[in-house]
Every structure is written in structure tokens, then in C-alpha cells.
Amino acid sequence: MTDNMRSADWLDAGGLRPTRQRLALAELLVGDGLNRHVTAESLFDLAVDAGERVSLATVYNTLRAFCDAGLLNEVVVDGTKSYFDTRTDDHPHFYWEDSQRLTDAPADELAITSLPKVPEGMAVARVDVVIRLRRA
Image (cartoon, rainbow, N blue to C red; front, side, top):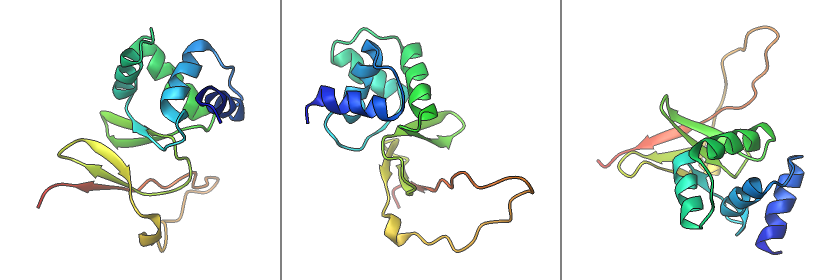
């Protein structure tokens, strides 16, 4: 499958119109079929390096649209830093404090045995597990 085809299919799966900027950013995110964890700033830098004319505000808005369409998950590391994950199934993450990287952690090694009772009328939408790492 070509990069353009994969990106267009990905956008179609989320019900999003394939605008030039969406296609360009989708190609950077999923064009090679690999999973990615990006910040808006790192995706903006990738786009600029690839010769795309796009503003940081457009990158933020496009990432939000991708999340709203269910194509990405936002992983909030702290109140000021969010990563966008192309892998949308439930899985834990390692956050490497030294390098400020987010990577997938082995899901088969995580056991959540119970959750607190949720308030009446509410349902658990998702549980995010971020394991922060620093050099010992």
C-alpha cells in the first residue's frame, strides 16, 4: 500500500475529508505504517522539514480533529505536555523524563485488578497509564 493510499484510507476511517494539510500530516503520522507518539511541536517540525507549509495552530487543530475522529489518542503527561498516539487500543506508556519521550510499555505485564466505583450515570471511557522513568 502506498503512503498516500494508507493516509487517505486512515482519514476515511475517521470520516474526515482529505484536505491537503490533513493528508500531509497523516502521511507523517501513519504513512509508513509505524506507530508514533508525537507532540504538536514535533509534528510541526517534521512537517516543516518535509517542506510542508503549515502553521503550528493548524497542526494543533488537525491533531484535535484526528482525536475527535478516533484516529489518535491524546496522552497527557502533565498539565503542559500532551503526546498524540497513533495506536488507539488501550495500552500503557513509559515516559522517559531525561529525553521527554513517550513509548509503549508492555501491556501484557500490566494488571489493573480494580477501579474505583464511578459516579452514577457515568462510565469509564478510558484508563491512561503513564509510567514515568528517570535514571536511578
